[in-house]
Length: 599
Image (cartoon, rainbow, N blue to C red; front, side, top):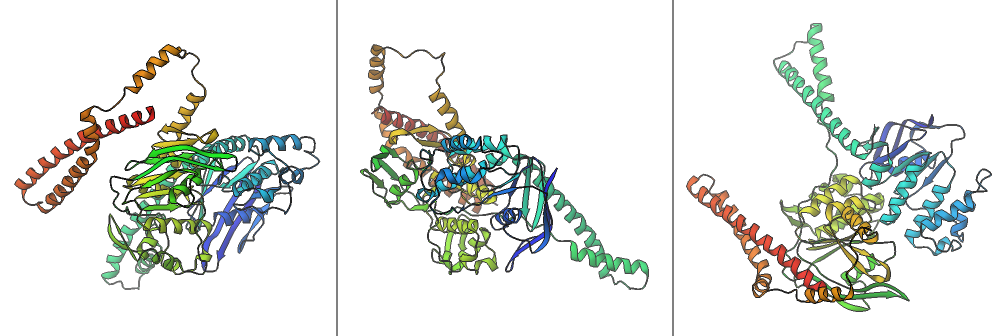
C-alpha cells in the first residue's frame, strides 16, 4: 500500500539547485536508504517528507491517517524534561498506554541510561542523540525518517539498532554513511545525483553494481550519439542546401544532437595525491599513560611505541576515553601519569570530532589559503584552488561564505585543511561523521597510500575494516586490549576471548605455569638479532632510495637497450633484497613486541 508520494518536486536554495521535478514514493514495509554526496539535499528531502519544509514546485501527498516521525541530525529538546518523560510519556497513546512504560524502560536500559529521571539538559551530545533515537523508535508511526542515526553511537549500539530496524514492521527512510548498516537494513536505495533521484530495489551492495551498470549504459548512449553527430557534422560541412524535406530533416537532426549530446558528468569524488612530511626513525611513543576524571579511571598505564606506517584503530563505548587519549597525544590535555614522546621529525595532523571554529563570514578559498597557497603532492605542486576542486568545491563554491555550506561540506572542508598541513602522523577522531560515502571511499583510498602513521577513533565498522590493521579496545578499569586486524577480526577474536571453547584443554597446574613463565622470561634477542634490529630500518631505507634512483636512470635510458637491460637486472636484484629485508624486519619487530609484552 502506498503511504506517501512526492510528485515532480523541486527545491532550490538561493542559486543552488538541489533537485528538479523529482518523484519519490514510500510503500508499506519499505526500508529505504538515501545516498549522495554532501550538499545534494538528502537532509532537505527528509524534512520535505516530514512536512517541515515545502517544495518550491510539485506536491507531496500523504495517505489518510499516515503518521510520520522524523529524527534530525541535531535534535532539540524541551527544557527541563527528563529522559523518561521525553522517551515514554511524550509517546503514550490509548493504544500503547499499558505497554509503553515497560518497553520504554527496556530500550533506555539497552541504550545505557542508568538514571531515567535525569534531565535531558544534563546529557552529553552523544547521550542526547541516543535519547532522541529511543524516542523515535518508541513513537507509534507509519513512516520513520532518520537522519544519520548512527552518528555518536558506538559499534555495539549500532549493531543493536541494526537488529531493531530489521525487525521493525513500519516503513523506514534514512540517510546514513554507514555502509554495513545500509547493506543489512535497507531493501531499497535511492541515490541523489546531480539533481535527480534514482531508485534501486536492492541493498547497498546491489546498488553499487546497478549504479555501475547505469553509468556504463549512459556512456554507451553518449558514444553512439557522438558517432551519429560526427556523421551529421560532416554532412553539414559539405554545405547543406535547406530546400528539400530530406535536407531540412538532416539540419533539424544535427541541431537536436548538438544540443543533447553531452558527455555524462562524472560523479563528484575527492581526488587527492598523497601529502605528507618525512618521518624519521623516532616516531611517537606513549609511556605509562594514566588519566582519570574524579573517581573514574579512563586510561590505566597504557604504553605503545608506534612504528612507521602503523594503522591503529581505537574502539570502545561512548565516554570510555578514546577522544581523551587523542587529545593527550596532541598535547591538548595532560595525562595524570606517563608521558608522550615525539620524534624530532613528527608533524601531527588532528581531525577532531568537532570541527574547529569556522568563521561563517570567511570565504572557502581564504580558509584554505590560510593553511597553504600551494602544497606538494605526488602529482607535483598543486594550488589551493585546485585542491578545493578535487574536494568538490568548484569555482563558484570556492568564493561563497562558509556559513552557506551544509554540515557535511564544512566537515569536508575541515578535512582538506588538515591534510594540506602535510602531517606524517594523522589522527582522525570519528572521521566518518557527516562525510558522504563517496568522500569516505576516496579518503580510504588516500589512507592506504599515506606513507605516515594513521591513528583513528571510529565507530564505523566498514571504515575500520578498510584502514586499520591493529585495534585497541577500551575495557573496564581503563585497560586497553590489543587485537590484530580490522573490526571484523576484532569481533571474532573478542567472541573467542569472552566465550572460550568448552572443549579446550584445561589450564595447566601451578607448577606447569611456573615452568611456562620461566621459559617465557628467557625469550630475548640473540646478538645478531639485536644488531639487525638496530640497523634494519636504515638498510631498508637505503634499498628503497637505490630503487628510486634506478627508476630515474631507467626513465632516462629508455632508448639505450643495453643500459636498460643492465638497470632492469639491478632493479630486480634490489627488489629481491628488499623483500628479504622486509621479511626479516617483520620477524624482528614481532619478536621485539613479544619480549616487551613479556616484561
